[in-house]
Picture 1 (cartoon, rainbow, N blue to C red):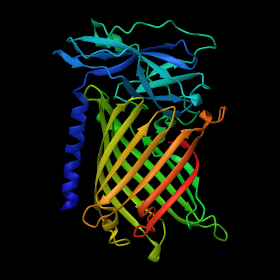
Picture 2 (picture 1 turned 135 degrees about the vertical axis):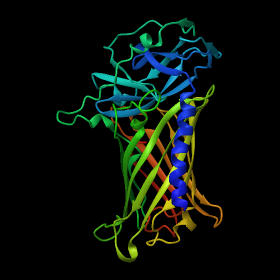
Picture 3 (picture 1 turned 90 degrees about the horizontal axis):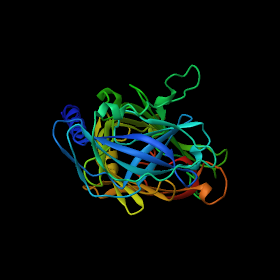
Length: 406
């Protein structure tokens, strides 16, 4: 009964989030040019009102976006050059504003890049890196309105170029998902912890998700694998390996207020450790997770509560709900080019048991003057069930290492 009810609720939940995302005016990148400071670009953002009624719109001071180069996707933030109060966009009209894009060091080695707003815009904007010494005079940010055919403005945005290797036409649909890192903390039976993760957009052009794109483009497959390595033991065996494939529907963040963006995802996830007998662990869970993002000074804060429902058999771990519960919270604060703290916590209010998993990262090239594309990575865990095998054991771990995705 609970499984059937959950299945019935998921389309309604997805439709609700989709409806909220579509109420906002459409936002897109209409021009990118070099800024005065090397390594920065000036981005012109246009907000269209294709509807028959006037719409109030306030361009945020910071816009989350994604930069694609050489098949690698990197989260970035556009910073408003000259903030101004909200305006009303006339039917068929648009407003424009100037933003600053600070190019990450790892993005400056490819011949071209594609910038996609994390707002569900229909396409990305492809641009070439400027030659050394090239700069552009600052363009005034007037926030001025204009009446125009929205389609004529949209034509300035070029579709994203995935630049796949020969024979791999869909490689551009593959991107990072959860953080990828390797960390170490001695003195336990799980000294090392390694995580790899990716997601794959099953339908449509790369990044063409949300907004006016087909709903089916939001369907993704993801795979995460987490390895716990007993490096201090003889022959250094892996204590446990968690395998976590999932299918989910993704809605990119879209502005729903003056300074808040709302997105989220809903899906079904399988977790198992690939072992048999008494060491076997497995579960299936359906979930829904809205995520809100707001600027906090120079930082960006994201919060995402998750509600999960266990489906199928829990015979390998019949009391796992006592330690995991049905609720969890993702919280993250940081800067794209600086320090970032991410936490995932879960709690069972009836049993009083739970856990928190935290990751602290910082670009290594900000510490060491180099072109090394790595993050220094700190990871900590406190509570029950760092891995599936030990779901009913209380564990505290501190580790440090390196990461390539955070």
